[in-house]
Amino acid sequence: DLKSGLGTAAVIVMDKSTDIVKAIARLSYFYKHESCGQCTPCREGTGWMWRVMERLVRGEAQKREIDMLLDVTKQVEGHTICALGDAAAWPIQGLMRHFRGEVERRIDEFSRNAHRAEPVMVAAE
Image (spheres, rainbow, N blue to C red):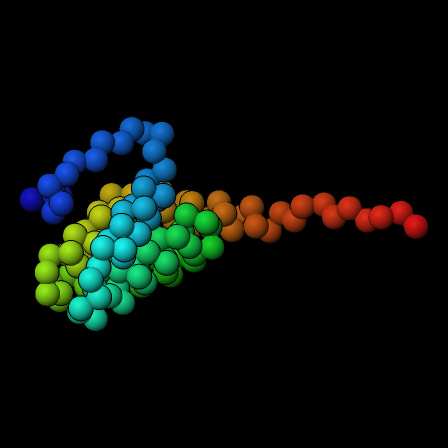
């Protein structure tokens, strides 16, 4: 069992130059946008998953948010009227299953760089 899905009958091919976090964030936005809003897990969960993924892209997330994000995917998966909730959860679960180390390194790198303040120009009197 590869835990891989073709829920939208599509295959996305990416090479090593692809920012996988950004790609999954874009998929999260797609599912948020496509949610009809009828069931609460999908309506609330897809929006929440997308916002956390965007925080990961921008470097604003913390490591503890990874497990929180995975918890939300588990609350959405299997708890929606249609299969959109499952399809929204699986890419994030796959990202963390296969690239969690990369996601954590990204968070570390962004937080290291955030502490390096840019020099401030002071006007001479």
